Length: 467
Image (tube, rainbow, N blue to C red; front, side, top):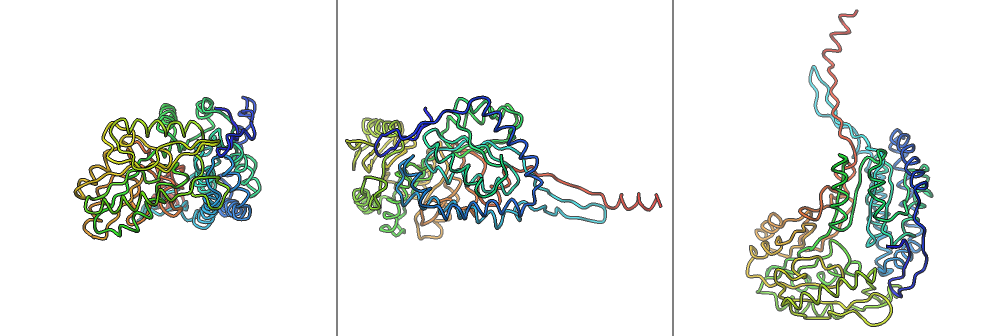
């Protein structure tokens, strides 16, 4: 895939970039390693100050960053502004709380021993990031990593190179030392060469299952730490006690996050038969009302899909699902004309073997399922290789307890759509990956936990004997 900005709304190639050659890659690796040795010893308050300034720049230049995101991957300007604002919030959060998250912890002491747990940075971390949230996915790694004393090398998706370079410049403008955060303009085939370099200590990847498997396999052979956030086919479960009107309203929003291109977007809507007809009617009406069009138009609800191949994949998945017996309840077709546009789509009655049942649909296409009980809902929700997030709708305490304990996911949100938050750990189970980002847990993923035991009783005895 060429490294290029191709406007998804028009198909126009705006700008192409040459990939970094071996000499350029080596220069950045050497610079990262040299900076890591100094950055780890920089006082944490100074590291936090850099991240705080990055947040201030994100707020100040929000419109510019939003326009760049919309140009390169097609999200609406409103969504792009919200993404930039969320990035600024994460920077402020880690600037304020990061020092306490990485401060040494007492493990208890007695007359003989003082025991401490120290958190120490790993060094150079390679971040392989996707195009769908071109700023947020990067910032949620970079902000905690830099406060922790690590340095970052970013391999961004090839269709958002200007976002990748803007992120490098962001931290430079925030007075990060040269080499603390660098972008590598490389193709996927070059990732093994960088990951295999001894100066790279660990890697984080957000992306597809094949990409995650490839990076994790190589890292495992090299005994390097990885964190993976992969695909999702999130369940949105609605029980009879729920506020069905509110659930249906939020469901439309939850499905169409980022033009439907989000791992945590709700994709499978599992509804109790007692309220299925009402929910389906309200949900389909809400999907039908969405305005598809130019992402720079403030009135647009759904912009284009990010690339032509993503649109074509979705067309095939919908067609194959219908051929396998799923009912097409709304939409289902690409929109004629320039750009990668696709209709808001609803499928029903998909069965195992259909893409709408087994696969992640990346775009504005939802699948409805009817179930007779909470147990049947949980069983169907878990009948997937994914386990990123789940949304559960109920006002019955016993039912809520059953849903939150039974749903296999890294995060379960009750009476709300799934969303990440800088304050709380985020990640998946099963084929959705492992490890966690965000919160105190996230900042510690790329830190060495060192147990320090000082035998004070023995030291005191030795001193007394010497005297």
